Structure formats: structure tokens, C-alpha cells
Length: 133
Image 1 (tube, rainbow, N blue to C red):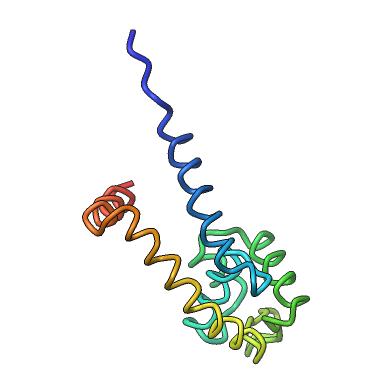
Image 2: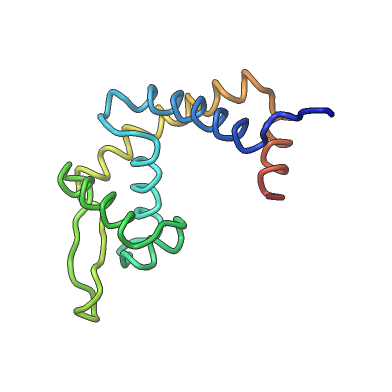
């Protein structure tokens, strides 16, 4: 019997390694790649409800709420009421915008290091494969 490596574990290990590279790049700002990505998502969506933010990031409301509250404590996001008083809206603070501005070149440099290491052909192949999942 041929034993194949577990695809899930290979992908999880690769994701941890890639996340560690981005986390190291963003460390001077005191945030992780997951936090940076969430800040970028809020920036792109503008004022966004917790429900919509959870939907577009594929997180349940309690998880996205915890992540937003942490970034709010860090002074990077703010929460407020929307037009419908039952809905919580999330916006970037001035500090959040500053962190994104300072983080963008760090993120770009990390992207470039990964592209240099793997080559654009492999990067494109990875993107195609992951999109197919």
C-alpha cells in the first residue's frame, strides 16, 4: 500500500510558514498578518457591519467580534451603531490608517521575498491550485 502525505497537514504547515514570514515582517508594528489583513478588509469595505465583515472574511460573528474588539483595544478600529441601531459598524481609526500605511511596504517586501524564493511561475501555480479548492 502506498501512503501519501496528508494534503491537509501539508497545506497547514505551508500556511504556518508563510504566516510566520509575514508576522516577522509586521512585528515592528505590533500586529500579525491576520490583524493586518482584517484592517485592510475594513479599509476596503469602509464602514462595515460586523455581520458583513464576518461574511466576507468567512468567520462567524463571535470570532470576528473578538478580533475586532482586540484591534479596538489597540486603537486601530472603532465600533459604533449603524443606521439600524441593532447593527454594529466597524471603522478604521487614524491610528489604524497609520499602521496600514507603515505596514504596506513591509507587506510588499515580504511578498517580494516569497516571489523571489518561489518564482512567479510557482506563485501562479499555487494561486491556481488554491482557487480550485
